[in-house]
Image (cartoon, rainbow, N blue to C red):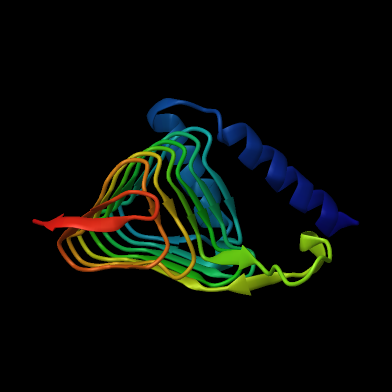
Length: 190
């Protein structure tokens, strides 16, 4: 009973801290997440509305910044974000199964959704009863992911690639490619 009460108090404190603006909010969120066991480097910026679950499975590098309302979910998967990465507002990383690795220097535009798993769909049984298929997502060094992009399990985006706003990535994008569309295809190279 005591452990449950302590856990609930931590949840309340973290929930309140999610809405504290400014530098004091950054500091409070970082301290609470550090106390909870999140592994992150120096100069991590965590803006208001930040949500995280699966802390033991998440690692952040140095100089990582999160815009408002970012969400990291990794209950059974892995999320690793390298140094000098910026995730703009409303970015969601969902790795409840599988692995999401974002290499150093990646820039991710607002409203981007990245998932390393998918539902299994076989026959006519209810989809929720069929489980999940795990996969991986890899985003290379110095990539730029535009706004409103969806990146699905199995995506591998090469070093220096650019993904145009509104694209859907579900396969391999070569290094230094500029890709766009649904699904994203290479338009040219930089």
